[in-house]
Amino acid sequence: MDLSYTPEEEEFRARLREWLARTLPGLPPKPSPADWPGRRAYDLGWQRRLYDAGYAGVQWDASPTTRLIFLEETEKAGAPYVGANFVGLLHAGPTIAAEGTDAQRDRWLPPILRGEEVWCQGFSEPDAGSDLAALRTRARRDGDHYVVTGSKIWTSHAEVADWCELLVRTDPDAPRHRGITWLAMPMDAPGITVRPLRTLAGSAEFAEVFLDEVRVPVGNRVGDENDGWRVTMVTLSFERGTAFAGEVVACRRVLAELAVEARRHGRWDDPALRRRLGRLNAEFRALWRLTQWNVSAAEASGGVPGVGGSVFKLRYSHARQELYDAAADVLGPDCLDLDRPWTLDRLSALSYTIAAGTSQIQHSIIAERILGLPKGR
Image (tube, rainbow, N blue to C red):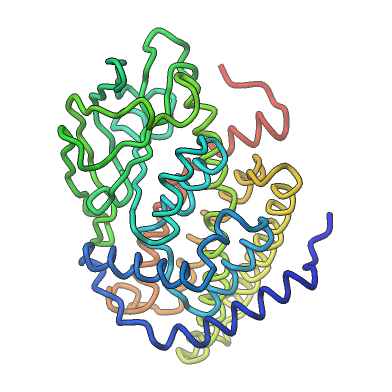
């Protein structure tokens, strides 16, 4: 498989670098992590800049390789992360682009690209996190609407979202994976209660969402009724396949900064630490190559990442934890200071082996779908 870039792709990289160099110095200051309305406005403002410059459509309209270049260069330049736009740009949007009708694409994709609407993800439930197919939120058909009752947890950005990609059970008598439907739910609909959840790092980007007889138009269903599990696998393939690509670049940058910090702290003479950082450097270089391979494979199969994303997600989530454990080793007692670089990153890294499918789930996917091993009883 050819992992090299074409002249056209390198030309795109050069244009993007030049635009980032001109644009980034003029950005306003970032709001406080606790100021979610401010963060929403900041993130949507950045997305609007991308749209006006012609780069917003890269997320969906360009080839997977071009999208990878975009993620690589924006991260290297220190551009704002997608933030509150994460679910819309990297999960719901690509799913609607792949599975939605023309009318649904026309309604939902342009506002995401223009930085006008924020999406949240309503997948996990209190008793159905890793075992997503065990979800119990019900949706009964009532004419041209579904009436939804239940609850969701760890709903990303629910407190500032306009829409929710929502999984519901529409046929309680069907086998677990066959009675699920994927809906786009307006977050201002009557019957929705949002309660923010505070994480170990002190942030509140997640929430509990309670649904009491919420009416969602049937026209907001993406895919067929009871075919939501297949549509969800498309969503999760994007989440595990390419959504973390920019973060690999960020980890490689942090690794270089760690080496500088180790010299400053007098730790560079420790051969064990140097070996540790060297192994991590090799790890993240390999993960970047794996990302390129996954993107090339997706390009050959119509743009949707395959199960190779589970291999990437499994190893990346553990490598990220190892990186920030190494950062704590370099910082020493200062690693307990929440105002120091990397301390909050270390706390948030603990969630990566759970978010987007636990490591145990990824092991099962790799065993069954790649290695062909039998399912456990």
